Length: 152
Image 1 (tube, helix red, strand yellow):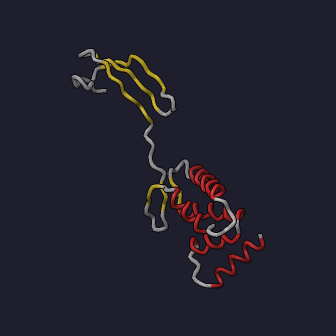
Image 2 (cartoon, rainbow, N blue to C red):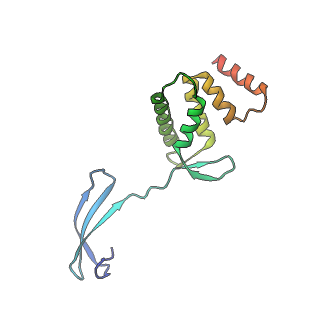
Image 3 (tube, rainbow, N blue to C red):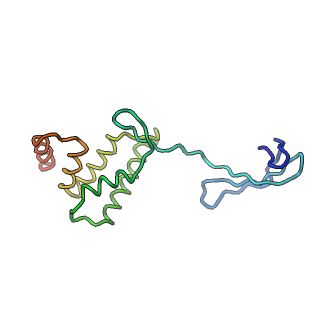
């Protein structure tokens, strides 16, 4: 590591400590050339979790967008805001778990996670969300989806 005082790259680590949050290490260093002590921090570089859109574009995962869609589907339904928050948190956990190795998840996978959760909570909200997510264009598509959830 380059000394901030003299610019030398020769130093030694005199002390290392894991930070309280467990996500970084604090190192005390001493420059061999000038003798000054300085501190460095080491942290894992985390790449953002990405969403792959239908057209192939990638953008950072934003749970607020998912929450907004769920809130719209559950608008004027007998579901508390605390329960909506719980649903959103569960979907966020499942999304991160599903895309953990790739660090990305498709909008289709997110949509299916939301539909699965809404199906177990409120059938009307499920149909509302499905109509937007699956781009229903006519009454037949609504009827087909209603029959599907009626049979399950």
